[in-house]
Length: 166
Image (cartoon, rainbow, N blue to C red; front, side, top):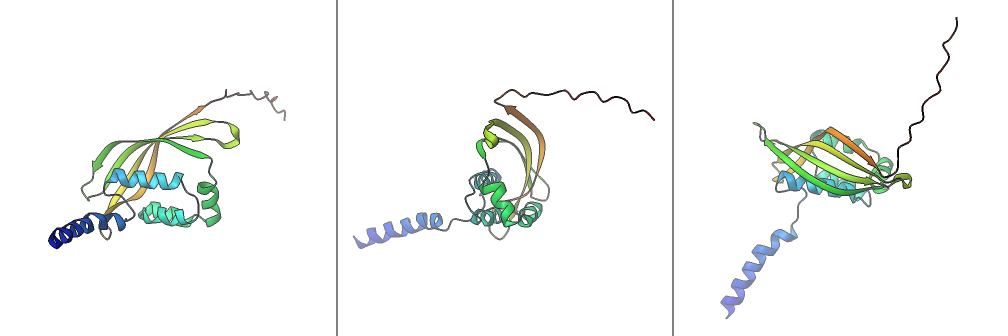
């Protein structure tokens, strides 16, 4: 009987221990990107800046590190943006082991009580961190942006300026 209890305990430790030692980053590039974006959109405090830094490397890390705490709170914590969807489309492996991942992100902007849906097609560049064996965001590049407004966009023509006389 004790052998059965010991065997059950050993199996439980093997399967539960990895769950208790959660690391930052993703086991796949898609998971890393998902975690990075979810952390950015759900930021509640400056602690989330540290989480984003843990998920970043290279240019992405440097850019995020340069943001002042006050700017981070304004851009992330107080943001009026709500993530609607994230779709990864095309994963490409580079010769050096890095990957590029095309993705489309849609989010709603609730600023100024004017609802707008924004969709960005982007490319994320990721690298496998040898220390943690997780994928990290190196940089992102915007490919295309689309803005859909819920209210009509009114464009007012400017009055023609009379030609200047010399």
